[in-house]
Amino acid sequence: MTDDTDTEARIVPDTPLWRTLVRPRWIALLALALVVAGAFAALGHWQLSRAVESSDTGTVAGVAETPTPLADVLEAPTDVIRTDDVGRLVEVEGVWVEGDFLVISERVNDGPTGWWVAGHLATGADGTGPSLAVAMGWTDDEDVARQTAAAWNAGGAPDGTVELTGRIVDSEAPIVPDEQGDPHEMTTLSEAALINIWQPTASPDIYSVNLISAEAPSGLEKIYSPRPESATTVNWLNIFYAVEWVVFAGFAVYFWYRLGRDAWEREAEEKALVEVSGP
Image (tube, rainbow, N blue to C red; front, side, top):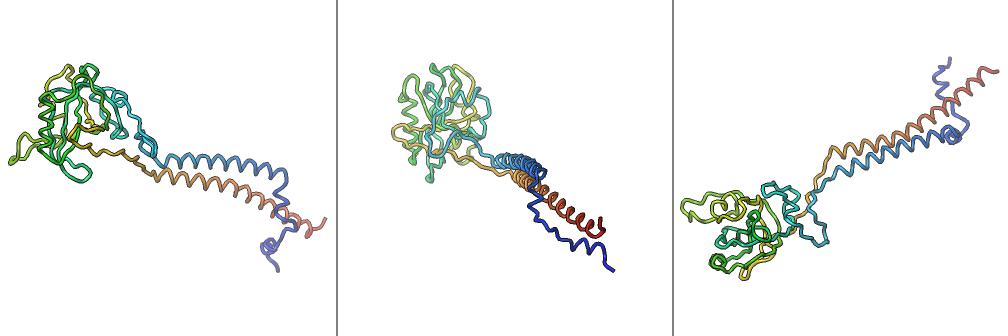
């Protein structure tokens, strides 16, 4: 006695599979499957593009930086600087406030440790805008730093409106001087500390950022402040979703193939049953 299941399993269609798949009905279903697969692939590409996120600092490798007006980056002096804007090259104009040039110690400049000379800039063409702390230059000689600051405080600073270009960075936190050291020594450029030292200007506002000048006064070196690199992060969840969409796209085509193959095998079984049972 022969099992019907074994008989059906031994049925081999006498026509090739492609003869079934090229029929108009299956060609139309293939076109539909390709449309669905294309939509899934597009969604996967979109998801993958969102998986890699780069911080935009406005700079592109190999392309010269164009300074941005400070007012375009910070509309108000009390605005908190965006992470993407830290290190941005900006331009600003203002008037130096005589008597507010000072020395900041323990400043590392691409390796060596030395001193900054910093100044107080009253922004605006007439100096009536918010105050801005400017790191002007660096030196490894403390005497040179203090002589430069003293000379500028004594009238050596440029008169009238000056135009500066440099990078903006976050204001630093104030540090309490060491009890055994100089109580007037400053090791950070902090607006919280400078507000108690600076002379009053036409505007009581102070920018919440510092400017690292791109050029240094005579006798000082430029402060090392390279172009910031774009930080890139990978969102693995989006990558997982992108892989899912690709799998769905492949399944759409496979589903069409599986339906066509089932129809091909079913036709062979029906033909075999007709031959066995007779007319």
